[in-house]
Image (cartoon, rainbow, N blue to C red; front, side, top):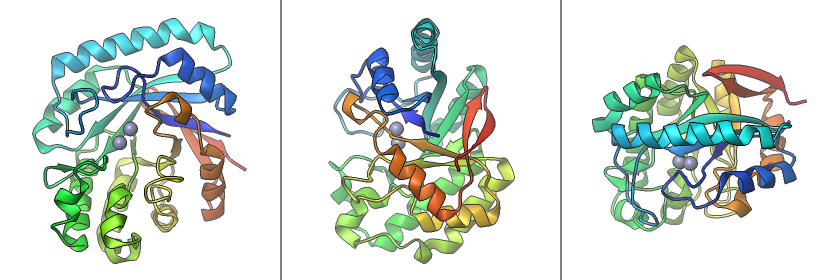
Length: 276
Ligand SMILES: [Zn+2]
Ligand SMILES: [Zn+2]
C-alpha cells in the first residue's frame, strides 16, 4: 500500500503546485492516501532561509488550506486526503508552535530539524557555511541534539527525514555512518517510543543529492528494536513532477528491513495497515 504523507502545495512558500494537479499526479502513481504537510513557518519564495513562525499568519493560512481541502475532497472520492503540517525545531518558536498545533484540527504533524547552528541545511545554498567549517562530529552531533529536543517537546506525529544532515553533509564528509552516532540516535528513538511518535521513510533524496533514503535502513532497524510502531512514507514533493514518486522503492526498503505496517492518521490517531 502506497501513502504519501509528506507533500507540499502552493500554501508552502517553497512550492507553487496546485492541489488538484498534485492529487491527480498522486493517483497516477497509485497513491490513495495523501497528507498535505505544508511548512508552518513562513519565508520568502525561493529564498533559502530558516523561516519564522508567525502565529496569526499560520492560523490564517492553515484555515485556508483546510477550506481548500474540504472543497476538493468530493472531486477525489477514491482518495483519503488529510490535513497536516511540517514544523521545524527552532527553540524560540516551540511554545507558539505547540499552541498552534493544539488549536488546529490537524490529522498529522511532521517534525523536522532543518537547521544546524543557525544554518539551513535542507537546501544546498548554505551547506558549506556549516559543513565547510565544522567537523562532521560537531555538525551531526548538534543536529541530533536538536532532534532530541524536538521529540522531547513532542507535539508531533512523526519525525521527518531523520538524517537529512547527510543530504549535503555527505559532499563534505562522505557517506553517513549511523553507527558513529548510535547512542545519541537510540536516545532519540527511545524518547519517540515513549511518546508514541512515529518515523517517516522519506524518498526526497533517493535519486539525488546523497541518493539515500532518509533515514538510513540501519536506523529503521533500531526503530523496530526499540519498538516504534508507526511508519509513514513521504515523497517530500515541492513540485508537481515529484509528487508520489519513488514510493515503491520506499515500500521495498521498508519490507527489506522488516517493517510490517504503514500508518495513516485521522485527527492525530494512527491506523496501521499491513504492507505485505
Ligand atoms: Zn523538511
Ligand atoms: Zn517537507
